[in-house]
Length: 367
Image 1 (cartoon, rainbow, N blue to C red):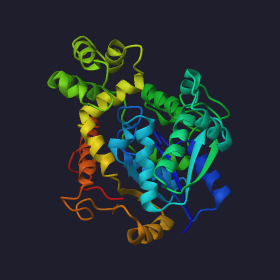
Image 2: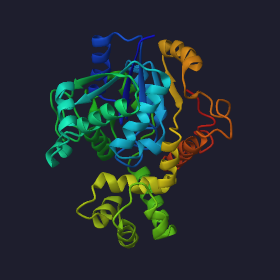
Image 3: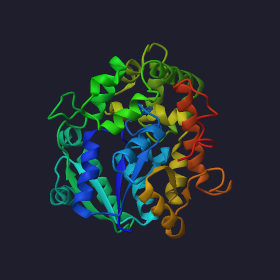
């Protein structure tokens, strides 16, 4: 089977995501489109607006065939580590194509930027998709993954744009609208109808959940000593002391981060740091994952074509394919280092939504 892979967060799934999937199908006619998707916590730091199960269901309803989880150790990291984990999974599954959106919309332009090695501050600020695209290209080469690269010009609203462009809105704009109003009617037209239907029947991680998230962070920062905070992958430059001081006065997560951040610290970097703190992701964990090239394909959702692909990949994949974490991976398997963090993340997400930890546990939920 000819397979195309897309690295995603779908936080939430919107028209631009649908456009990317449709473009890959139109250009390459794959037998299956596989999405490697962040779980309940995302790359910018913090919880996703919808659970990984709901977002995976959205993707399949809107054209994907198989959605597998990007382990939190990779998902809650900077662009390089994020891309490294995603490419590891694609290589392990033996996918043929890696497809991604970019502001440049040109592999030639991206290769030129990679060759020159020069990214201006404006590039980093205004072209976040290009930054990730470059990391996918680097990792494809570094891991000898053999993936055919394909990029699609990002159309409509920019990555973090607060504007509506040609009936298109960014995921951050949609999240803002949901958080402010709590009503899906406010975003009607920005998401495919199939995705909207799932959103309307789902529990959203907004308002009360965000308050619980801040409470968890406050407790963790008070509970951990500076040395433990400094051992986090995103920590450097004495930020642990700034956070320990800031948490005593902050009344919101925004206030905490803005008070603690120094000029060299990006907001997203600090958001990732506190998320790593809550999930228990240390520098040592990342090092072990890298040394052993740890990866697995944890299945979240699939279509009929995805079911056929799963049968094939169970036999041919070089990484574990997991549909039941209680059966598909032995207790002593090295991948448990990452999987245990993912299951913990799911339990914490249930706390944020004030839901039953057991009923929403990764040991109970199935694709």
